[in-house]
Image (cartoon, rainbow, N blue to C red; front, side):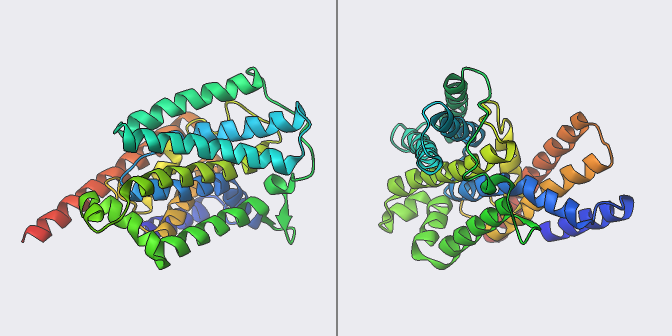
Length: 308
């Protein structure tokens, strides 16, 4: 179904806008969704386990601002600074997982609180102002291209999706994440350490946010405390469009990539058509609501068939 939606979008925008199918525009779309796609890989693990992560945008901001501050204000080499930024994001992700698992906080509350707190940390790191004059050493991560055509962020995104697919679809450990989301009690009785797995999903999400944060840092070429604000909704929309159930236990990461493409193409096509930005937000919200409705209806139909 989601592949059909993608095809319809391509056909519609190709017919109505001659510049849509140009190679430079398509590469631009892929570059625009690259950070969202990287983060969506981590969020897929959380959703499959029956969780929810609303803090991803703020973790991106923390990673970017901390890395930028270490490089510019403390003259730390780019790679160690980037690694520390990623570690900070993973630690914050782990904290969310611990709150959910051991204090039994609802995932929405735990990650919503982290979203607000982490955003505040990003502003504290920068003093509310962007950090400029970044070193050029790893600038290619955000603005480089391969063969002069394919953006490096797109390569990073595809590698993340490939690793996620291999882990979830071909390994025993990956199947355990599905089991945790499908039936936690059955997973526990089967000997799966559900606490460890649940916390791990948030650490993976934090790691993905860290990678995405570094890419975004060099895409905008500055540490922005307000970066990626609202990205959590785009990520959730992409995952749900890709068939990942909000109840956990269902979904394929390969389809999440298609969901990211749908969100990116919709935004790009509407921009080319010069649709007002506020209307674009309306359409994006409607797509999320529609995706969740389809998810719920599908779930209800499956339950009815099972009872028969």
